[in-house]
Image 1 (cartoon, rainbow, N blue to C red):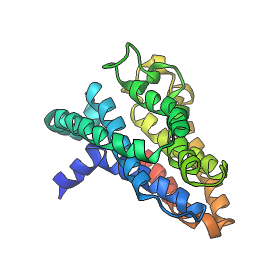
Image 2: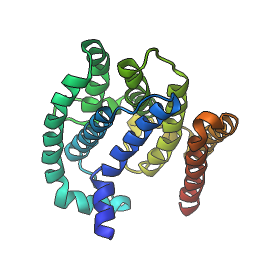
Image 3: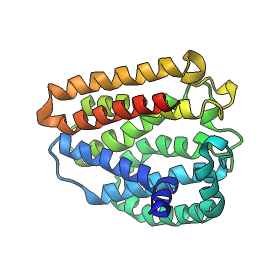
Length: 242
């Protein structure tokens, strides 16, 4: 069982499913017909994006020993699988995306490729000080909320994209705390600037705002209440362990 869980988590299948669920919530939030081909694209592209970053910058940290060991065994295979899935996604993108939306989405794709990888560029966007959290939240809100509206909706509304942006921002902060001893001091991540305790308070404050918003808008975002409540409890639990 542990082998299966390790494979799901460390291969980035779990985070790819998270992107699919986030996109699915967009269709449910606006009461629109679910476009399953777009959900498949999101899964394939998320799997590709996260794995090429992981494979081109292998982790070597005692605090992430299980992940390091798993990637040393299967990391190269995941990289090859990522390219295969990326190739599979190309015809889906061509059929699903209009030319205009494809052009608008190109910066997000480029940002994913050059975010951390040095296989394709001499630098990574991740090396730009204080950019990490904002960039991740922007990309998720764009591909999971704004792009589906551009493709399938009659109009674009940014209310839910703001919700997703703040939610992703909050749940990404703990990963910066986790990487505090791994990241270079030049990155100027939020925990490096204000400390891990303040970061936890910031993340919890954001999630509490989302909880109250969800509570008073249960007709649309009832699930957000459950997700944000769980996330706030989980962040508190992680901090207590540290």
